[in-house]
Image (cartoon, rainbow, N blue to C red; front, side):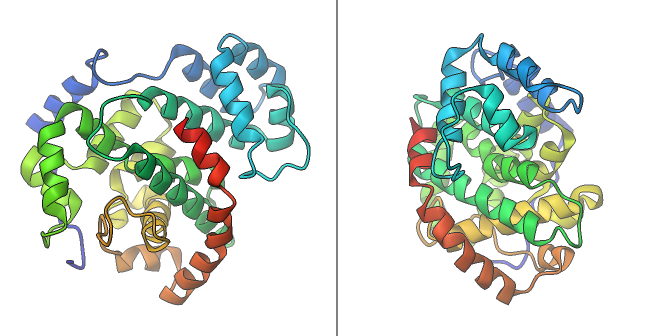
Length: 299
């Protein structure tokens, strides 16, 4: 594959076209009002656990999903978390923000017709999220980054693929069939065929969902992190996290990388290929211990 990802800039006409599609509430999932309010509480330094508990009590299904995720082996909590209030106290607001948004996104797309394997898609996304969070912790001595925000960005970095699969299923199915035989990247094929690539569409969806910029911008620019200097570190974390997920054996398409490793991303994070090898070794047992999490997020 090529050494970089020279995707065509998104034209204004294509931006308007896909913004209109994303505003079609009947076609594209929207974040429930209760979740948007929960995100406001979780982003408020002065909010209390009780505030979140009372709000989520209005959506028992979401509360149950969040608690099941919190009690999974993925978090390794030695005691049972029986309430949202306990979860906030034990895990903290940042982790609860990840859990609420994770549980919601999985539920929004559950059962929707797809040409791609949703189980495989989510496994790749969760492993990319774990890798991105581990990277964030690894570079914390050099960069001020929130590991849980990094986790969510990794989880959602390919959300645009699910949107494409909904709005242009036949074209996207054809595109994935071409991918194994092509020298082009996934983003290049999408841009050529649909006028926009999954990262741009994912960033637009994050904006539509009113997610914070710390998620929007890295999702949109993770293919070429240096293109967005303000959020280059966060975008580089996702870029490298997705590469590590593929190297771990959880690529969306067997033996095909969605994009090549950008040397600039390593430079921005002050990492070497040897560092990536070591991080992959560290990540392996974490992946193996997360099987219950995969089952929960897919169910």
